[in-house]
Image 1 (cartoon, rainbow, N blue to C red):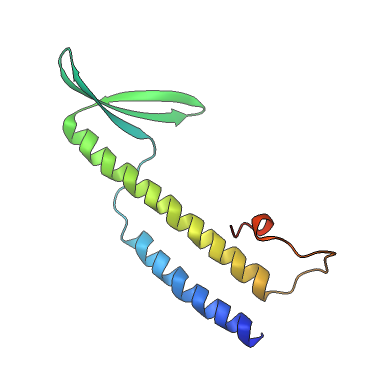
Image 2 (tube, rainbow, N blue to C red):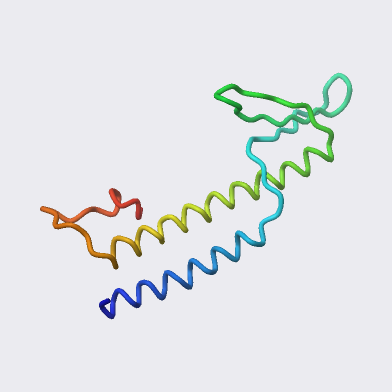
Length: 115
């Protein structure tokens, strides 16, 4: 392995370990969206909406459920961002350090999913 490749792998491993640590600290997660719809006929109205098999499903929530789900959804979004970074790092190491077939032209960063 070339010196430059080793440096890339070492840096990627440190970053990857940091990202794994972030995932380990993640609390409860949930998909969807929550809304505070303001006061309704019977008091405040909170709602959780998500997709199930391509259909939108909505559920009425208490204020406590709304607060809990709001944090869980924020956690879900941060997990998704961390996973995207981990995927990008994995592809970078794969394409920069392992042998690959001959190509007529270099693969761009967009094609490799590095952008």
